[in-house]
Image (cartoon, rainbow, N blue to C red; front, side, top):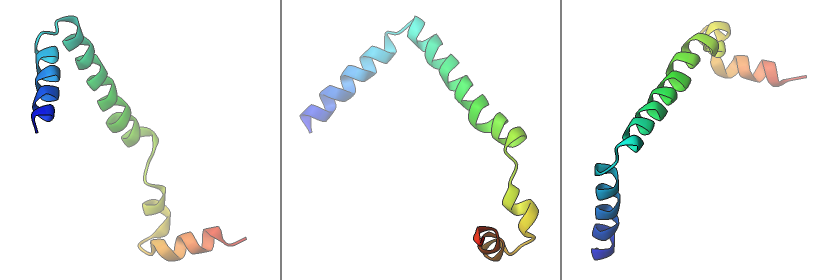
Length: 66
């Protein structure tokens, strides 16, 4: 348990004393939000919901058959 506390203290002190790193992490988090939320909503619609009309399992089964 002492090892976990030392690891936690190492990361906590490192992130607390950051100046430029904090800004960079903020930019990274904003980019991730844009990628995963905004792009998914606008460029990757729910194809199955639009075409299956409520019976998703049957729709997938018919689409997989040659």
